Length: 161
Image 1: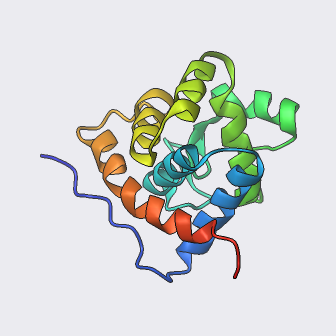
Image 2: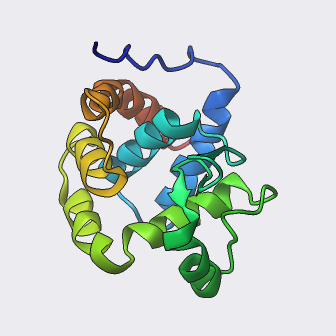
Image 3: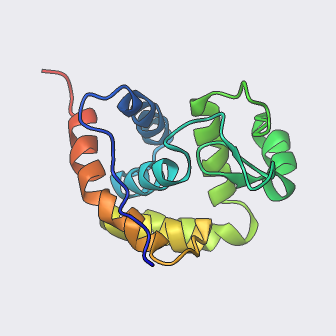
């Protein structure tokens, strides 16, 4: 049985404030719109953009459900963020996932995501290459929300009049 579609919160919902934190953090780190869309889409699919989520029986942490056994120590050493600390902020988790995307064997996936021309393409690469989403239809469900996030992001990154 295929998984139900992912339904984003309605416009104006407070959860979009969390998405904005992520988008602006990625943007200030020099990341382009396709990568930002991919990160926001996958962060919503994994955790509804919540930094305090713990999953996989206590093994995965934060909005992107980073596995502590692979990422905690390298992230802590490199940027001083403990992904297992429930007080880590959303912005800190955004920095952590950017580090993880470029860490070790993930570097090729990060290069591909950064070369993506659309949010849908970046979301697919993030979901299949980094998240390795394996549930039936998981990648397609994430890709399906990318266009909505792309429209939202264009509004968020518009300069104030």
